[in-house]
Image 1 (cartoon, helix red, strand yellow):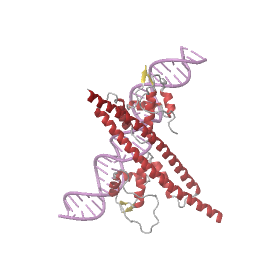
Image 2 (cartoon, helix red, strand yellow):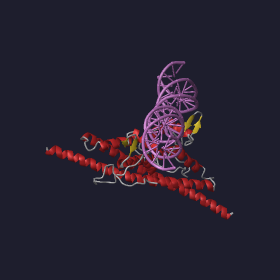
Image 3 (cartoon, chains in turn red, cyan, blue, green):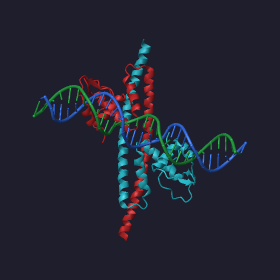
Image 4 (tube, protein in one colour):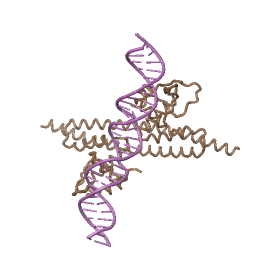
Amino acid sequence: MNDSPQDSMLSDAPSPEKQRRTYSIGELARLFEVTPRTIRFYEQEGLLEPERRGQTRIYHEKDRVRLKLTLRGKRLGFSLAEIREVIELYDAMPDGNARQLQRLLEILAEKRADMERQLEDIRLMQRELDDVEARCQEVLDNLQHQGSAK
Amino acid sequence: MNDSPQDSMLSDAPSPEKQRRTYSIGELARLFEVTPRTIRFYEQEGLLEPERRGQTRIYHEKDRVRLKLTLRGKRLGFSLAEIREVIELYDAMPDGNARQLQRLLEILAEKRADMERQLEDIRLMQRELDDVEARCQEVLDNLQHQGSAK
DNA sequence: CTAGCACTTTACGTAAACGTCAACTAGCTC
DNA sequence: GAGCTAGTTGACGTTTACGTAAAGTGCTAG
């Protein structure tokens, strides 16, 4: 149940003529198993900036990657606001002044620390699960013995 | 910034006279850096069942451990309802029938799968962070060179 | 031409997880 | 016994992340 479309990096690859594929809002929604409503909401929150052909939105690879990162960030417990901050700073990178870049590095360090904490939490939680499962099996085994002994 | 008080397992240790320490709601709140309101809310949601001395709540080790697990679960993105379900089933374990135990094992397997997915997400996110940081440093270095070359 | 579908905006609704405030009570302590 | 501190209940407010319903636009097939 991971993200289906795989590739990485917020940036556009340097290859001259990449897949110039575009997506409608419905396609994108199906791809990531979210509703169109969700995608529009993310745009409203500044996480996506799709092209407009007249009235309708047109999504490119960049938008798809952003959406993927957004959803992953969400699964990791980041708020949309946090995710937006990173994306905004990243977008401002090429002409970003040193102060902004420094800020971005700070945020990245924070996120990194979050990840470490989560890893530790997961390890601890896995141990709890091991323990509970062991006790559970134990009780089940006892029930088995009783059933067959009687 | 992990949980301060360390020990594990939902169960009471078999040692006859453990630390019979109790906590007021305020103490517990400070220990875990949450508000009393939060603790009362968790009780209302069936996650804690402190003793009552007249009007006031008295928390034992069991409650502290539950609170710790609850907070850890939260950090991992579980809802209070999910956490409660596990706790309830766990509490019903000793006299639990086989069906309930089976159900608990199922839930544990689910949680385990969640953990695996999260680990994968974290690995991917860490790679993204590595990449963004690298690009960031690159740009910073270029700024340095320009500054010194000019 | 119109029916149907995908898309659009606007606006109000909702669930989870608390925060905040008001109005108590109970135990010190000076 | 007045004041302080910590605890209590109850009720309403708030934020986040969407869901849902209403009313309209635009294209395509029959």
